[in-house]
Length: 591
Image (cartoon, rainbow, N blue to C red; front, side, top):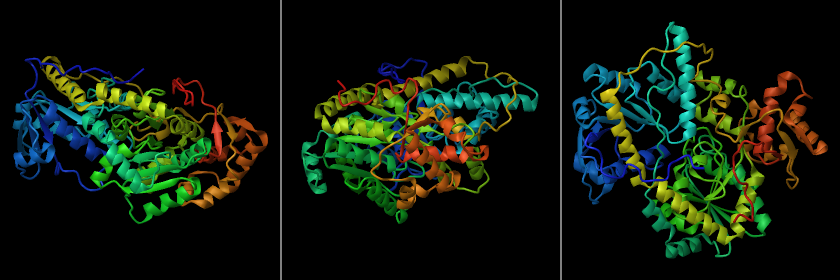
C-alpha cells in the first residue's frame, strides 16, 4: 500500500477562488553550484517545475540583491515556454507577496517570516509555506518548533516530503505544546502549528526515462568503465559522505556477497563528490578493499553533469543503503526508477514511502538504536563538543542495514534480467503516476488554494493545552525522536546470531579500515566486543537481553552500541520481528 496518492488530482482547471501567484524567497543564485547538496537540487528543480507546470499568473522572486527577472527565468528553464510570468523584487517587499497570495521558502524556517508579516501586512495578508529537507539537526528542529510560539496560523504550512516526517513533527509539536502549556500556565492548541501536509518531491520523468533508454550511451560508458555485457553494474548516486549520508560498508559487503552468490564479477559505480576531497577517497577506497575485494569499484565525479546523465543508462541496479537520520526523502531513488532501474534501498523513513517492496525493488530491514542510547551523543552536539557531522555519524554507527538481506536482493536482480526489467518498468509507472513534476506541482498549487480558503474562513489558533514534558522535545534523544525511521529498534527480545564472514573478526574489521573505527568512544571496548562475538559464535544465537545480563548494568549502553556495530558490519544477523515491513521479502523467485 503506497503512502502517496497515485493520481493527477489538481491538474485540471483551477477554481476561480485560487491564488494568482507565488512569491519565492531566494537568498542566493538559483543556479546549481558545484558539489550541490540535495536541498539545492530539490529547490532548483521545484522552482523550475513551478514555472513550467503550475499555471499560476506570476512567480515573483524576492532576492537580497537585485536580479533581473529574465536572467532568473533563463537560469531556470532556458528557452522553454511558460505562461507564468517571472518577476523579481526586494527581499522584504511584502506588498508583492500579498499580491501573489503565498510566500514560499525552500527551508523550514517560518517564524521570522510570520513575525514580519504581522508587523507589516497583518496575519491574513498571505500564507507562508516552507519545505522540510531534513529534521535531524537540533538547530532545524529548534526553528521549526518556534512556529508554536510565533504568529504562525492555520493558513500556513510546512511541507513534509514523507509520512514519517509528518508523524515525527506531529509528535514533536504535541510534546512541545504540552511543555509550553505547563510552563506558561495556559494551553496551546495541539498538534499542528502550522499545517503539515505530505507532498513528495518530484522529478522530470521524461528526462530520466530518455536517459535510461539511451543504448548507445550505455554501450560507450560501459566500454569506458570496462564493464562487459555479462557483468552487472550496481549504481549509487549522491554525496560521498559517510557522516551525513551513509557509511558505505554495508553496500560494499552486500555487493561482495551477491557476487559470490551468483558466481559473477560485479561492478559498483559510486557517482558523487567528497565533502573532504583529501581524506574522503582514501576512506572509501580502504573500506572497499576490506569489504569488497572482488568488486570493481568505480569512483566517478558527480559534478560532471554529462556523466551523471549518462550513468543511468549504463547501470543495471540502483543501490542506496542509507543509515543516517539526515536523510528524509531520497530523490535519487526517483531518478533511478524513472530511468528504469530496479532499486535496492534501506527500509528507512521516506524511502519506504517511495519504493513498494517487491514491486519496484527491495526494501532492506534496518535496526536502529533503542531510546536512551543517543541522548549523551545529542548533548555533545548541543553543547558544541561535537560537530553536527560527527553527531549524526555517531548515530549512524548505531544504525544497521541487514547485509544478508541486501546481498540476497542484489543476487536476485543480478541473476535474473527479467526481474530487473519487470521491476524497472514498475518503477517507471510509479514515478510517472505519482512523482512526475506536473503531478507534484498540481498538489502544491492545490495546497496553496486550500490555504487561501482557510485564510478567508478560519478564526486562527486558540488556546493551548496543559500536559507536562520534562525533556526538550526539540532536542530529545534521537533514537526516541527517530524511532520510526528504522524497521525496528534494538530490544531485549531481538535474537542475534553470528555469521560466517570468511574469518573476519571484530578486531580485524576494526583495525582494517578507519571508517570502522569511527565512533568507537560510544561502544564497548574492543575486548568486550570480541567477547560478545565469541559468546554468540559459541552459543549459536542469543536474545539481546540474555547477552546484556552477563555484563554489569553500567556497560549496557556501550554494549548495545557494540551489538549494533557488529550487525552493521555484517558479523551478526538478527531476526526481523512482525513489524509489517517489508511486506514481502527479497527472493530469487519473485514473480
